[in-house]
Length: 144
Picture (cartoon, one colour):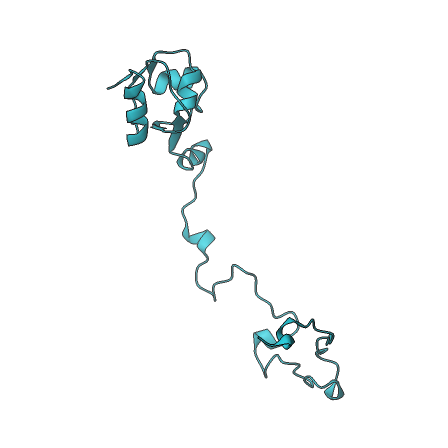
């Protein structure tokens, strides 16, 4: 292995200054922008969302009015075994989760996932993942 690969660079070259005349070594009147066109002109930048004149994405999408448009963002809530362990109810369903404020009232679907530990017996009436099913049954619980 060569020693030259491990040497630090001692040369710092500054970038060429564009648009400073022919004597600068980089460009004359065009300064690297090409010949003609929108992008060669001063102030010829288009906004990031511009799509070449076709109907923009913001106008193609439907307008969702009102408060209900936020319900689509998180359609399914995830409840952990640790959350169920902290609850007082013995029957776990959508209503009891909302009453004890484990989930937000706007959720319409819930699923139990295996995170945390469950020690007490509970009856679960909502969808359950495979790992959570095994943990609930090991604790003596029931899944309907």
